[in-house]
Image (cartoon, rainbow, N blue to C red; front, top):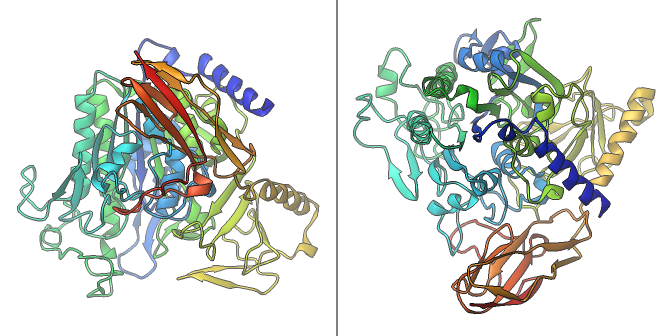
Length: 593
């Protein structure tokens, strides 16, 4: 209880201090969060890599050149050690919720609407919110179809790919636009006179969103389609014929017709063109903000969602190669670019050398905008706004804990890995392949190649796990780190919910009034602390995901509380529903006039 009180007092102090931008002026600041798909930190030239290479020889090495993103880095802060998950959906769920996957990744493409996200927080605070690009995290339920389900996470306006299915995302794409399924695989784009290009359509939505909401605070989340496969030419590819005549994918299960791709409609020769186009589109967003005079009122965040694919690499200044490692739990699968830029608020040319976990972005954005987080004790993320804004020169976290189960259901733990890392050391919890656990010294072994036990375990596709340093060979510094990280792993072991109750509240509410409900979850360190609120009759009273009840009309209503740990709610499609009678607690409320 003391920890909860102290955390809330600290949050209040942060909101009241000068670092909360919203309290510096009379208007709320804007946020544009751009998430690049499949890019390691060295994919951005500001991080120092010199060349982009094809490990299969599909294109000649080209300079790493992202001038538009470099501009943002030069005008703001570059985080040198930002880490995500190895693949996109675990990253996106953790990013939006501020939680490690152990708390809410029940199943792939099935995130339940009761999860509070940064979209919910900004919308609740009066921001107009929009999302454009790639979704992926849910497929809907029996009550809310997939094309509208994304709206349940706080988005006023939606222009997204991968809400119901995938298909082509680049040339001749499909989107769901504010609940309407739209195909762009016939005719030509009236703005270009050529085939439709999905990244262009998503970008135009972003620019239009900014234009239309220039006079009110907005939060735009822009999870880009680029540079994920399918690899294709872009409208800027020269000559133009490859783009105009490209045979698009049907789905990823169709065998490639040539050696250049992993499936039909995938051609890795065009990856450098995709990189250049991605940078150009980000420049268009910055240019729009400049043109509207919003640049100093808007925090721009640019981040990668996981490492670059393993078929590409980067040549570094010393001539060494940094291999792409998407899917791997090594640095080349986890370390991504992270840039925050806001002239006048973040100092030009800033660098932050502390560890940043993707869960940190949620509380950082909230502290920046002066927004209260209703469930701070449930978050794993830690704000680093004090460091980004220059108020504090120290680091904001000592280590990162990761629970990663690929895209497997939480009940299927064959791929599960748990690890804790510091800047220099990393320790894995025991698993079936390595029941003794694993330990690596990242100072000399960033790719985790140490295999002192001569035990290399195949996990999936091209992913192998080495056994690490022999525990009997640790020096004093390594042993101390081994012990510290062991404590972290122990502290994050799964703790089941024993009890979920609705805290006492008045049993009578007047029509038109609100009543804030809260859940009492025991033990306090339970892992899956999320809950679902439900009203037996929304005509009498509604209750939202924050637990706020609104009395609509006279009558008696029952409010039900479900524990995520007990019901494991899913949004995996039309048959998804929480079983009746599975609630953990219930109360009756009398609504009167």
